[in-house]
Length: 228
Image 1 (cartoon, rainbow, N blue to C red):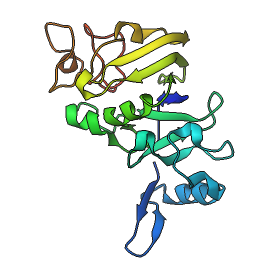
Image 2: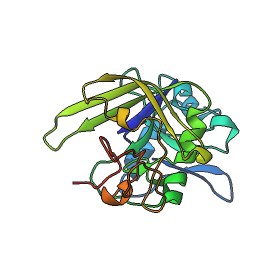
Image 3: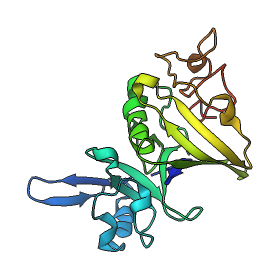
Image 4: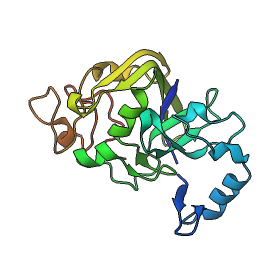
């Protein structure tokens, strides 16, 4: 899981589907978890889904973890998963992998716009990440769990993603945690996918490692790589 906050961002995550009918605005819940989603939504204070929050830091403390719509930098808004019960809460999750069901070996446009379901496995989208991290100073937290249940984390006091003209350049500084500073090798580099090679390797890291990341030569971290 990867997430950010203030503001805060994080890699990890989940999603409710908020929609409008032709009659009146409403909340729609789909799939096997519809009852759980509906119960979580309607047992929260009504103020949890009001206003125009710019990220999860604007969600009231009394609200549960879940999917909320945010409106950074005057955008039309998009759904994010807010992790309210981790490390003082208010983390905006932008990536989560849990079982390998979602294909992360995708091209530039998919990573630009985002894919998956924030309730399960997903990538928020590089355009959305830039909108979030360009509006304030953010820290980032990465939480990792192996198949034996061992856990580790990495936090960065500063995290930002550039716009597409910068190749969604990564800035991540001020590491502390237990997982090791694996982003140090990737800091300052553009994003690469299988159809857009922006690394500093004479081959192509995204093809070699079956993923997409801020590759240098090639990896000390690749959280979007092949799921084992």
